Length: 172
Image: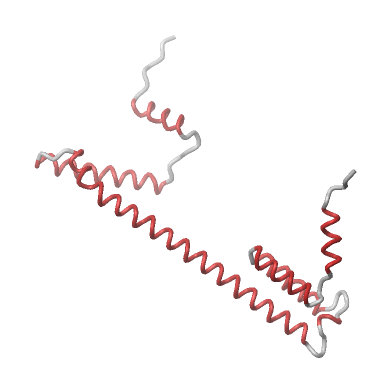
């Protein structure tokens, strides 16, 4: 049984599959490939009439392409830093609002949080606010929340030690 020779397209597909088995180009990547192909075709067409080869064009355009790529990379890094700073600011603001709300609950003259009973609304509100802030902030700020709760007398150190002991595997 003789196999038909593969077309160049099939061989290219096999090579891509071999190199990157699960890669499929996104529509955006296909669009960029088409744009690059059109751009190169225009360069070849213009260069043909002036005796400029694609290699000559590539030597001419390498430096601007590297500068453009560097600019795009730098811009992306700046955007990521700005998003990180914004995230940090939002976490700081959420922590500040939580501490203000909890302070008000602790200092309320009519129904102070420390004197509340299990099932009281003020305790439920404090619990929900605490769980919400813990899900919104990173580890360092979670530690600040836990220190606040411990120092305010809303949780006990023994509870924390008991929880740690319960998580440890038994030693023999």
